[in-house]
Image (cartoon, rainbow, N blue to C red; front, side, top):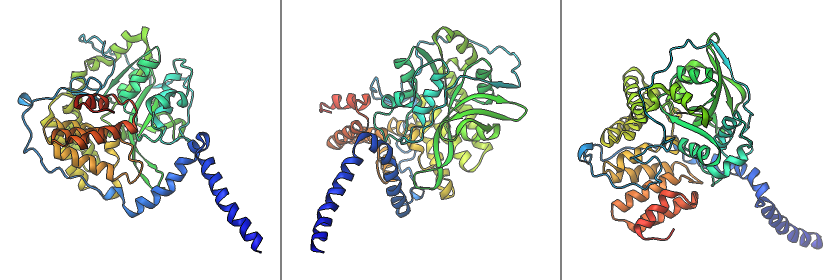
Length: 434
């Protein structure tokens, strides 16, 4: 008996050590880490439900300065969504007055050639999987495992921004890309009928790692439509290939992301893509039109849809550098958010859309930047891998004179996103090492 106990006493720690070593092997960890996190998150989210957390702007418009007199700090040339050049899309596009040829669209289109890529088995790999699918249509040879390490250097990064996907296309392939907002159903049909898949960013309700169905951001590649059935055909990395999405569902869910879309194309077809963009060839006009659409929807919608409309108005005004107006729109969005049923609240919003940070910071509402970043990070419970939130909290701390705190947050931002240009730039300005 004693010999057996000794054997067990020796075997148990050895087995535990072997299990730890095995778990930390990259191939094993890559496949199991998200399952372990699932268990941990279930416990933490039950103890502290993130949907109960509400951000309440404190400064409102008291510190806002009219845009005409606002002293705008010089942004980093690589700052994410920089105020002077929002969203690094194609910068060499001309801006003539282009009109869309009024050719009747076919009632049904089905584009073939997209190689389906499943996001499962990798943590939050929606963006790499969908980008690889959109690229595959044009003969690109790769998959999510090729895209992922570039657009998502931290495997647990919560989101890949549209501009990061556009950067990948421009820097890693020989294809061209445009990113625009304010799309509508005809926009998708127009590009599909001309032979171009459309990569859309939208909101949806999916079962998350905690086992709860909740709102989150999602990408889809739209490869066709059917006017008779009133559906789009999408390649959905989460649900499956050739997934049907009703027109009304697309309208509702796409609104959550300002109707953002990307179109990838061969360089020699750029002129055709520009013609299809019509008035949206000019980015300023694109944001102005999208801002008007959001304003109309604010008064036509209610509940969560009205929240998204206010948020979209803020985002479009931010891109147009009307920071005070944008901040006011975001204030209204957060007010609507607080009145939503807890289970309906899109509490992950700042994972995907960071416009409020820009609006509040450039309206000199630094405390609201700090509080918003804290609220966003605290709601995450664990793996707070949001380099943008740390970046903007650092900017606010620096503006308020907390240089040491700013340096710490800039470094944390870099820890979650190595070589993150904006953080490197700000540290260089301060004179601190990364």
